Image 1: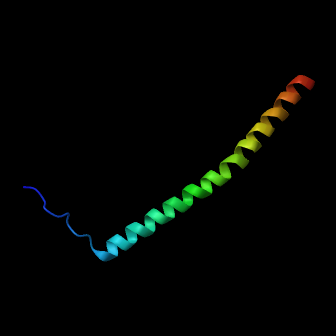
Image 2: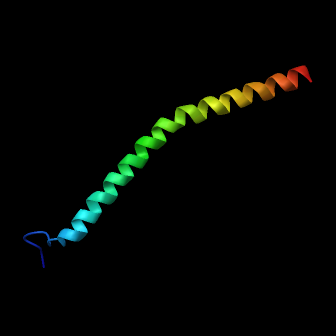
Image 3: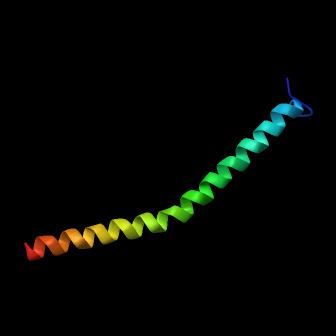
Length: 56
């Protein structure tokens, strides 16, 4: 049994799905903006730890 047309989604369900996808996309862009700051902080902590090992 093959579908000739895909089954229609409930309009409310479709709206909620689009809203969820938009929120996920927004969260992804926030994570991508935060990553460089986190990487810079990790690199700085690593340099400080290395300096302490050398000096200590």
